[in-house]
Amino acid sequence: MELIYNKIITNLLNEGFLVIGGKSPSIGSEREFYEILNFSITIEPGIIPILPHKVSNFKIHLSIGRLLWMLRGSNSLSEIEYYDKNVAFFFR
Image (cartoon, rainbow, N blue to C red; front, side, top):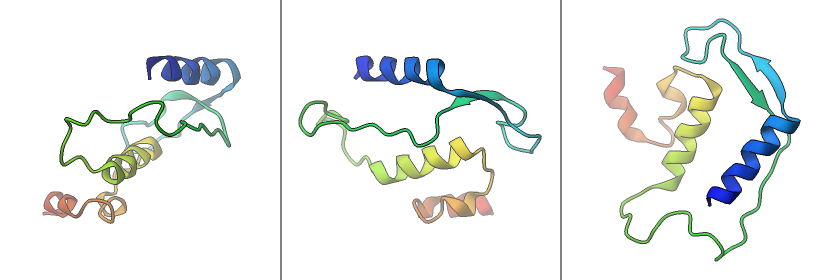
């Protein structure tokens, strides 16, 4: 898994475009990052276990939803409520 991560980061740094985030109330405000548009990766089934079997009660769809939400730099909890109904606790 580390090899794949290193290849992705190397590809991003070599071929990515520098982006400076706009001013906003989010944690990513005015930060610099690299992006590659239309990037995809395929992990062949059975080659790399994403999660060890010992991890229980882990909901991958919640993690992906939160990751995408954080990468957008959003502060709107209503955007991820679809993936995790427990975020309603933070609306109070």
